[in-house]
Image 1 (cartoon, rainbow, N blue to C red):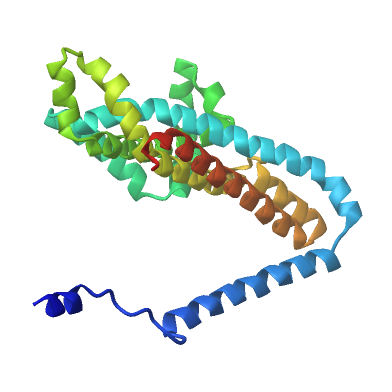
Image 2: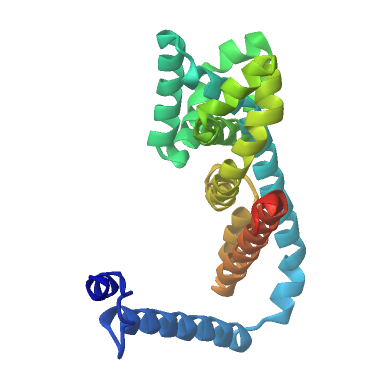
Length: 273
């Protein structure tokens, strides 16, 4: 009997040799190494010090516009996501239905189309906007981009917030109620700190996606990082202008990824054993 149990509980043998998955994995890694080496070699060979000195300040300015656009959109989207998430969790069918329609539209349509709808579509209502004093805001491409990006990220952040709150066990609410805590106190002091741990990585991914998606504003004449890159290439026809832009985007993403991981380690230090 013991012998049979030992045979059943025995862990599977470690794979030996070179299975297909391992060969494919090493092959992909080698391809990436060759690709990165080729990019590095191209930058060394095609290095143009005069081009760099002339357009580097413009790249810095464009990077500032990109970061400002994303930062404002993320903050406004976070503020707007709170009532949307509340409406999504509401038992009122009309309220939850409207919130669902909002989230469904902005998550189901491309950000580029939403930006075009704001930038080109709002201009059709210029007389009405002038009457209410809003034309001065919407006539600027940067403001239109902020408006479209804020509405878009609010839908994603609302779903992140809703999922994080609902992931907290119901017993937390019941335990707080038994202690006489108000619902707002329970949400602020008990539910949100636990939900933040769940929502941190999705929030980090949303910020990264917003940074990469912000490149589309170059199409509506906003001179962000990609807008400056397009302008530089149109004047020089030097392909390395796009390579430098890709490297800058990659550096930003890596900084954000490591920052999110550091924050996660800090707020979950009590969970580590």
